[in-house]
Image 1 (cartoon, rainbow over the protein chains, first blue to last red):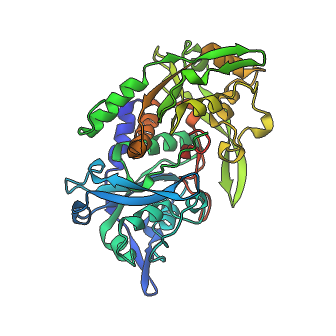
Image 2 (image 1 turned 90 degrees about the vertical axis):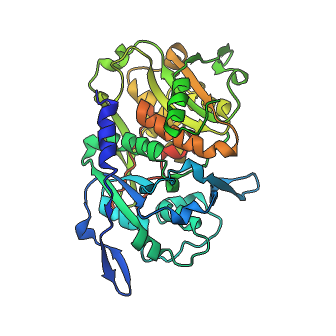
Image 3 (image 1 turned 30 degrees about the vertical axis):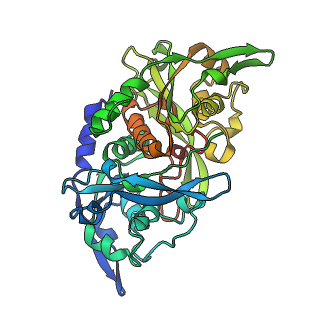
Length: 195
Length: 217
């Protein structure tokens, strides 16, 4: 039996935040895939440097896929009290599981896109082409037209390698445990079907 | 209600409530077994389905084969995995958590998850994501545990119980989300399992899975 201590030990590994390795890409930057693990596992994107950008706000407003009967999306207010931002510790923003940590991280960071257009998000936006992380993250800073400097200067990441098919369930349960424990803001999904 | 100020202890308290099992309100009709939805909570919250009988059923095997879908090169591929029972808490003498989810209205969701009007999920659907088929994710996995049984719905009537925690209102939408994730990680319900991992660029998002509660919700 893999007990809770085992999961807590994995969670502690996931708390070891490091810089996101970047390389020049033309005028901008991209994730350095040679410096990131290319294995299966669980990863976490963190807000690393201070909570100044969050502190002056009592709540953050994000629009998600939850739609009312007329198909209009519902803006949700996230009480910042829910997030661990009083301390100066890094804030977990997004936790994912993947078969290729480096590739998935690059897909989520979308460093070649300055801002995800603000519009009505649909379910499809959260499937293949869009990064759930960026869809939520960009909404936290509605006054910015280019989020990539923030990503480059303020974010870090961490990971736990759990390779192979035999770890597929472990990845699933650990990801959930980490999302529930760290309360990673950009994982939020409030879509709930009623019937 | 439990104070939310101490965040982790709030979740621990909710988890304690979620371990309080209740009988499912089964009723026998001319058409077979059904659920009396009026006896289930209508409110929003997190609920769990349990195997309340002994855990012999689950202890006798070290692993269960499960067919689940994954994406490879933009295509959905059914793949067989082995669920190692060492991951799941079946060693203890308390009931086995089978499926845990959140909903804005629990009664209809629980009814849809149980699908008592369906004796067995057709084999052709095994491994197909509930999100695409409107089939209960719980039943997609549960029925696979009993390949020899013609009518897994009967097993449900004989062996299942449920529990819930009310977390009402859109103010609680985020608590429902984070608490459900936490509870899945701690209780490791067998039938929640979803193995959609992303293998390469532009495949399905790692978030776009059963956990989204489109069907389970």
